[in-house]
Image 1 (cartoon, rainbow, N blue to C red):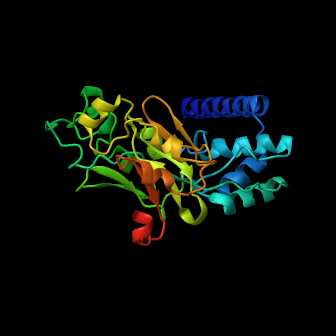
Image 2: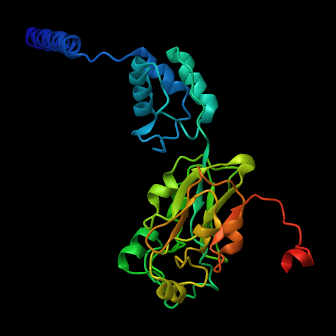
Image 3: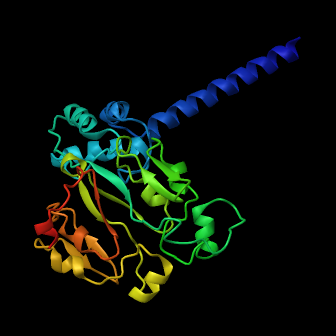
Length: 285
């Protein structure tokens, strides 16, 4: 009986000493965390989408608290939460939230099945990333949408879906938060975040093909061929011609749509505009 009692006392003493050592270690090596980080984190949507550029909502909350020392949150934005959430964050930190222009994702590809005929059938894993690694996909165009839905799987808000008829991803702007998860996932970088624009209107070159005109034409009937006609038509210098590919600067674009009329390939598209009135005979002449 004495042996058992002694063993119990020894074990209890060891446990007590260990607890005291752990408590002392905790106090000595404790890392203080600003309580405002938890407050900020609680008002965030917890989407952990990475659109803010930080590792999850906790990382973004830490960045906000750190930025509060400078007195400005101008470089920080929670895309899923939008302006309402940023105002709550600013209120916690005693700052004012600067208005950030909302953005939406745009898929810069118009290579539908009839414009970009399928030459082979991919019989591997249905993943854009894997298909892109193994070649050009099922068409001759190495720049267009692969249509396997990696972006769809990455979107936490159900804002992007692959159209089965065209095999091109399409964005539902009413659901898109501009977090950028789809853009980061796309192996061909054809998804771009652009300002939502007044009344959600925007004019975009729906092509990412950087090949020369003759080759681009062979690869897709709807491709940009870098002819430069849109550049000449724009009076606001909003269009730049890079490597055989035109790109419209949304900050300079005045939505006049003259570039859309001038494009011989139909590669420039205007979004969310009302239907155009038919041209009169004088205008057509």
